[in-house]
Image (cartoon, rainbow, N blue to C red; front, side):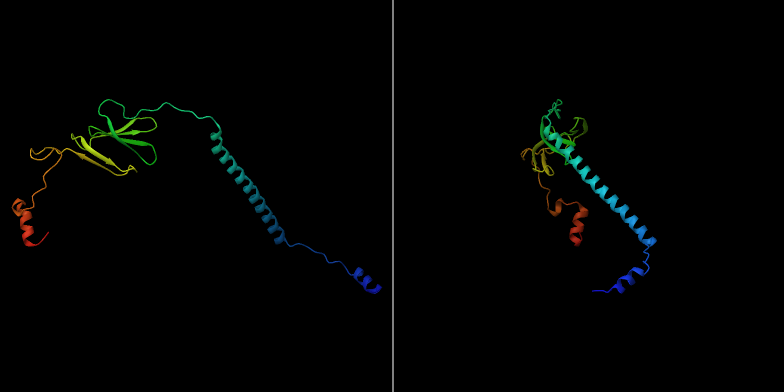
Length: 176
């Protein structure tokens, strides 16, 4: 137990004056500012996410509406054989029975292009991959041989006599 003299000595000592340095005060104010901005920013971000999710989900609770269909490829002429739609669902290409390819805008049905890639020869067969990216079309040849069925053609002759002179010379010299 301390005696009476130690208590009076502690009371008689002058009190130490504590002063906060200026750098500590500045860093405290800067930290407080950034913490406040970060907290308000977090609250704003969560609020905006809620607003976005509500705007996406709200139409699920409203009634559905059906618009009139927009006919594509119904203009007169050949009937459509197949249709292919691009990845963004903005354009559709129709292959018609006369060999015409017609490209339409899906949203308003406007014709963007009308192509005849096979000339005047209509397709006789077509095959399309399920993804719509690959297709094969068979057409009639420009002129048919009477001995070959329509759509067939003869393979070119491989005999040296049937080659053009420049090709025969190259084959004999060992080049090409």
